[in-house]
Length: 469
Image (cartoon, rainbow, N blue to C red):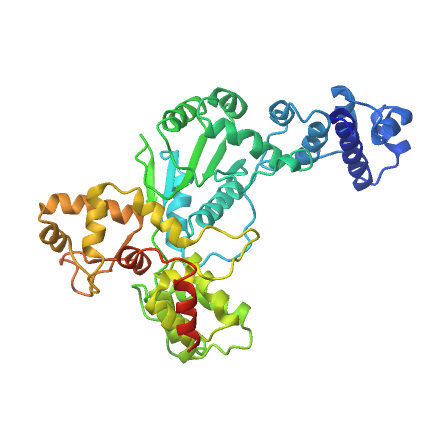
């Protein structure tokens, strides 16, 4: 079948599906649209190579199609002109963020801060930065949904790592076609005029999920913001980028220890506590892993002792959601106590050796962390190597002494590693607000620095054998 025949057949299928969804016969559609019955039959049978634009408009009006349905019909008629087909129907219905599959755990403060930034008048370029697997995309998704719902604003959601690109669905799904059309305009860095003309003065949130800013794209983002006065841009990135006029929002791992705050309500007005409530309260990482455990092992009673073991695993895996989910997948084979010992001995081998949770598998977390570490300047890499061995926390002065550098320089490098998410800052002890801040290298990163990446052939069998012992 030639391309023209395929396009004709595609338009016919889309038209027939829209007509049947509207509950109309061919005769009724002809009467409402003033398009002849014969023309409608020829269109649905794929006998017309390229339907006229006026004909498509009359049919869409007669079927009372919404923005998405109208765009689907126009794209099926002329898929080569995506921008033109979508320009007139660009709306919140057509452009919206993906709906979440899982509940967002423990990000209330970060979500409020991000939503406030995107909803205000001052900030128009915000970057959520953090380690791979820490939950940047999920947080951006929730914030984008709030912006979309509150202001009825179109959201252009673009996965920049290529995971969301499905060209074969461009005709079938207008939202996919829109994303696939916009993505190269952004990633190539030299076609922003076309995108700026498309958005114009319409309020829009552009989300570039997994976008690592380059010297070519940085000025283009600035140009786009200057050209589209009602546009806001949200980036998620593994590395901090200091864009002119932009705001950074670092995303740390989920807390695996109780967060500061008032104790749980007690007394007659309080609900009777459930088993494990006191152990999981204000510990988002524990709550998240418990949700994975309860779904994978519904037979496992969440007692205090079980939750205490889960909390230890969460601490060993730094509260990184991707690591927690990967480790939990082993519960079909090992006990929680075995997972705890494996997480203590070699957290990276436990996580990277887990069975793939998605079709085609995902890049092991250890490789992603190694890539972030490899991109560090020498000064920061040296700091990471020097401060990884100590099991206890350390201060900026400790760094300065260990490396023999001024405290001001040590502070700059500690700050940079915090933005990358490679180290964790501990909350101040009660009554110790005036003391120096204390930090530690994440356990997964520490494992990477001290031991290096182990091969799948060598380490995974040894570790699993240890866990099974």
